[in-house]
Each structure stands twice: as C-alpha cells, then as structure tokens.
Image 1: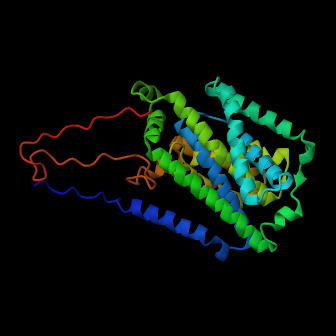
Image 2: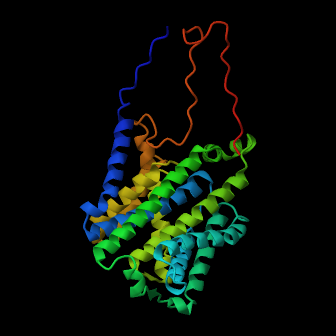
Image 3: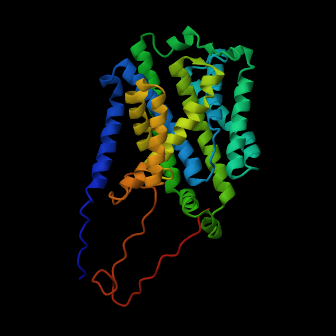
Length: 358
C-alpha cells in the first residue's frame, strides 16, 4: 500500500480564503440591516463596478479582447433604462432587464465593426465607437441633450417613498445583478467553452491548434458581457437618478478604473477582479481627500505590482496559496499507482484522452 501524501503546510490558506469570501457574502446579504444609507450607496457602487470588472476580465484576460470602450454598453444600458422607465412606462425592474437586452442588441453591430481589427487597433476602435455613441447621446433632446436629465419623482417613488427603503431596493438589485454575473460567468468558465477560454489565456496559438474555435469564443465572450454591462448601467442610473453623456459614458469611471482594478487584482483569474475592486475602494475611500495624489498613488501601485508580478496581487498570493479560492478549472481524478491495492490485478492504467475544446 502506497503511503498517503502529506498535505502542504500552507494548505489551510485555501479554506481560510474561502471562509473569508463567505463572510464577505454574508455581510453583503446583511447590508440593508447593518449599514447606513451612505454605506449602502458605497456598497452599491462596489457591486456595480465589480460586475463591470468581471466582464472586462473575461474579455481581456481570457478572450484576448483588450477593449477600452466597454463604457459604451454601460451608457447604452443607462439610457435604455431611463427611456423604458420614463417614456415607455415600464416598472424599474422591467426597465432594468430591457436596458440589458438593449445593450446586447447594440453589441452585435459594434462587434461586426471592431472585430475586423486586432490588438491595439481593436482597443482604439472600441474607444472610437464608445465616444461616437456618447456624442450621439448628447444629441437626444428628450434625454436632456449634452447636459442630461434627472429621473422624474414618480419613477423614483416607485422604488420606495422613504429614502431608506428606496436605497435598499436599489442595493438588492445591484446585489442580484452581481450574484448572477459572478455565478453564470463561473458556470461558463467551468464548461467546455471555459476550458477553451482558459487554453486561449495560456497559449492562444496552442489552443487553436488543438481545436479551440478562437473566433466563436471571442464572439460569445463579447455578447456575454454586453447585457451585464447594460444592467450595471441601469443600476448606476438608479443610484444617480439621472443620465448625462459624460457620466453615463464615462471612460474614466467605467473603463480606466476597471482596467486598473483587473490589472492590480490579477487579470486572467476569477479572484482578481474581486481583490482589485476591494483594493480600489479602500484606496478611494481613504486617499480621496489628498486630491491629485490619489491618482498618482493608483498609478504607482499598479506599476509596482506589475513589476513584481504581472498577474497582479492574486499572482503574488498564489505563490503561497496552494490552490484557487474559486476554482474554474477541472482537475483530473487522482489515479492509483500501479501495483497498489486500489488497482485491480491485471488491469492497465491508461492516460485519459484530451478532447479539443470548442
């Protein structure tokens, strides 16, 4: 009988990290009962930015679509939500879903345009499309033109007459969107398609050579992210209670900050966007009062972390943490050693055949 291998000395770090994630989830669920209105507003911003970061990480970290124009879909979702809620008379909940669907519809022609480009040209092309949509939104007189418009009181009151109740409803919507985005994206990464995306992340040419359909995977990721970005845009509009081209289509808030979050947390990992969002909000909360130095510290921190570990803070932690906190890859079952009691006599142990991912 073969000896049982000993667990590594740092094996406790994985369950400890998962426990920390579970405690964070419990805190988020208990948010409306334990947090004040300003704290609920901050948590709503956190959840909205987390959704956007998860989607950008899927595009850039796995599908190799380095977009700097995903704020376009946040703005589309914001304006679509406002239009359905105010002009079409939809309830805020139905208008939120309609905003996500509208972002998905717009994603199809945008994809046909920017997918003709690659690398830096794709990044610039996505930014040009986003800026064009922002300028177009500024021409919509029904939405206040370039200065934007506030949401009518009747729509605001439909979420709750009391401010505490209204902010609780908005928070629950943000938490639901974040939970669905995280859970469904995790299921996607655990699927056959996710296996192909992981292979693309590690070696794109190698993934293509073993059967991964690179074009189809990129199309799926691009269309996957659009409705979630639109939903995030609707949540942001509910919180701000107005739409305006510079705010709804903000490249700084919904793209630049998101790139920092994903890069600092760990691009191409499932834990990276979560870690990066937490770090970003801690820095913003405690260093925002120092003005311009706030941005300088963000830049210096990102450069310093990348120089130490290109995979971000999660890459640094993975040097001591023996496993992923949120596993997205499949591990093959452990095979008994030849000649051990667990292998029947006369049988031959064969290597499992690898199936090309689609």
